[in-house]
Image 1 (tube, rainbow, N blue to C red):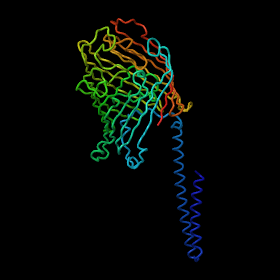
Image 2: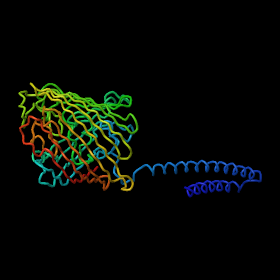
Image 3: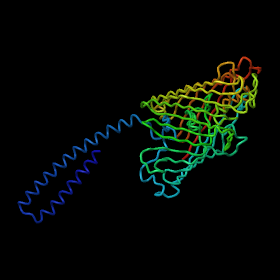
Length: 468
């Protein structure tokens, strides 16, 4: 900082003397006196500027010290506690550089992706009871800006855990995206309203934002794992500081096919009421479906007894109705240190005595171990459960590892999952995770199944990477 001031000062004085020297050659004594006064005035200006510069440099040093104390190192893992979904993040940049017409075509195409591989072992009747190596996920995303604030998004999955033997290559999300619809249609500025049309993650709850192997801090997912994707239309925006997103979708698991005219309708609001607290609330009505697009970790809304054991008998209905709500909260204690909470309920309208009420809960603390590990090491725990919690059983598969539906069918009153893990970011694009967890399946009293394998241990090591 001092060298910079000296250079500035010397440069200013040199310029002044150069100007004076040229004038002195033709000046008389009176002109010399005037020039001396000018020099004194200029010196006073320089002194004042130097004082101002010193004050600026002093403030910069204070700010740099504060930033050095608060921020993690540049090669530490990226901060992931911001739960603002991709809907809010897609609001357009108003800078001229955002104009697709002003960029070469190759700068209008973004390619990124992620993948994971490792070794897992699950005890007692689950899909990995022998212990085996596996590819967890492999996904490539492509987004092409076709016009200002209009893009096309295509997700290509070459590996999706649980579907390796049946689906070797498939699309995930595929949609047309209008990032500022009112501006595009009517030229209205500042009233952001986004629209997605195609096949998308169902924007309910928070799990769909963190289901990918690179975003999930553990290897397993929650016992409930509420998520889904479907064809439809998604609108999103922001009103008085509150983000909102609504969807109208087919509601059925089959792609591009609807088995009933009733549509899936959902709405979600979310935001940060304080600097450290994030809240969201979601709700949906599924409409009639023989097999819903929405699922709880592999368990869809469908007539009870479909495709699995049911000691209480099977429904005669061809389709069911359902509606659900969910509340999520996350309190951020600092860099990658948070406590997440989730509660939800679903109500399934089936035939006869086969109506079901399902509740699910999740508690997830995560703690970055700090500067001692260069902000690369964290520990995380998760307690989650889903069930009817009575003698009216339902199917809870526990995807992707537990295999609850094939083992217990619709005879479960609940599934409880305890999980503890550690993760290490070798760099911002490479994460290694180790997890131990335990699944506890609780059968209804009327179940005729042999009560074995209802408590299972899990151990896994996975490396996750991302690019782009």
